Image (cartoon, rainbow over all chains, first blue to last red; front, side, top):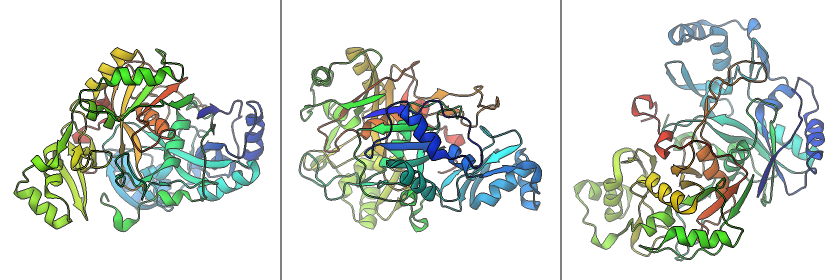
Length: 238
Length: 238
């Protein structure tokens, strides 16, 4: 398996044809093949899709103002986080852990002020699977849309999959046997998360390398980033 | 960046010279260079270090018997899990989420009955960093010791780092600027976890490919797998 960042992608703006920009960048390193997996950081997609909010136009409500005062935050930023949240799981010393409307549990419901124009916040795509499907249709390879998430219990962020097209994000090992002929302990491997993590190792974080081509994997099936979401009734850590 | 599984590693037993077996396997694909990172699934290490328990010799105590009855488990297995645990965070429908004595939070405190001889459980290494340091000293490249962990909120397991040598497991982005000249939102990237995940994409799960060579990364610094553990006072999800 090889991982290569796509070079020379310009800063993305609303309405940009991201698929064309990615295809052009990929051509510089030999192009994309149908068996490749392209991992795209969501921020490039969010910007192309116009999922950027000017804080100047946000009117914070009572709850946002209260949380902002308690946590020394910009109330407009907090309002955007609340707008993107289905549930706020924890608010602790300025850290907001929220479940987004899609169902992802992450800091600030994915609302990010870095790598955004001054005074603006970048949101997650409305439907990361749909974004992945559009790129998959245009580029022909499997696509994973990624974001960097923190984790409980572990320090540091890792890149995970929030949408995909042209592959199943989970590899099902149920029924396979170990080297002693017994059923395996690990039943499902979150390969789309592992692909997102692998891609993150080769790209720069300054948003100029939002896409990485993985070659040599065999992407199978077709699934959704939501396949990676644990059902609420199965959630031991709300 | 390239990832290649080391071929032809035999089933490991207690007392085996794992470094020699890994070196021989690596030689078949061109050997190891000092700039390589070798990701080794802990199970090979645990077996070489004799961290395997025969369930027949385990006497379950009252708490293990009670939990086993409640969750339809083998009380001896539960006793081993409790022995390896500093704290049981959740016990729910047969799933035990525990903090190990090292501080890792994972299912069954890392005690695993699959890929183990019949009637035996494989434990985590006593000191995964020390295991990594021994391999690092013998092989010359950076080493990451990995295990597959489940995650709250997300379905499926991913491989993460539980020990390392010859590299810092966290990349510190504090103070670096985004493409707009502002400080980055992501402050620490858990690159050792991302390396473990990347390695998992290329190896078989039947324990016959426990080691993967990553080439083309620049491993820097020297740290511990415990650098990835969030301090207890910073834990929002106990």
